[in-house]
Image (cartoon, rainbow, N blue to C red; front, side, top):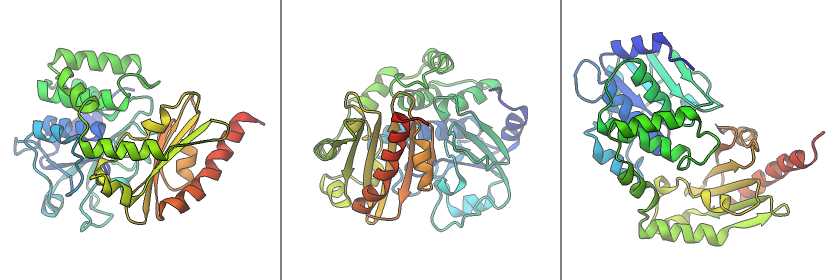
Length: 332
């Protein structure tokens, strides 16, 4: 998908932007946020301010923060901004802004929406949404190249980390030729490939390791081995030494079982709120399941937040998931 000329023109003319991502930002979100904030700093010349409320950063991804000299946007920065760059966020209510700001935090000002989620609602003033892209970082890379901006080793590293993470180490169907071409160019620009691999794949803390023990122990197989799911309650998460921000890609544990068509992870990061992570194998669409609970995402990777504890969440979600599997097994 070609980058709209109007998007580049708008980014180049913003004088005091704030960059926003989604709640509980992952590597793709942080990479695209920080890269965009460096590429379009506005009139003041330094990196644009980024919206990262306290508690947003996981320990595992703090290395990305350490790479950049970022300034967290305050409510006053939101009030004085002449526009916003929203990345990797399908719906405006999912934007990661301070709780003190109301739902109309943009105040009718320009919002540039750069995203790759199938469920994106095109909430921006200008929307660059490509659901075929493997990551938001790939899209930000395209925009930077289309704007003829140089890519520094730090920006290359940020974008490469997001592409690597959201394609699961270049192993998902979203690993297209364009994703690989972008990654190759970023390596040529100085991306820290080995360091990124160490941080993303080989740097679990003891608390994260303990949380994984819980998720392994709680994993169950149902539907004749077609569906694997696991759970981690608030008490189990905190007893392991983790917090809600540390819940990222642990759905890969039930997903790793051979022969399954669907994996689900239920985690209670805050008491009474259960996060639902769904993954579909062999092209199975799980976005419909997430959508039934007010969530969104991609066709094969989606999620939602339920206002209930894990037992109720499991009771509500599994019948919907099993019905989806039944339609797969018995197409009409």
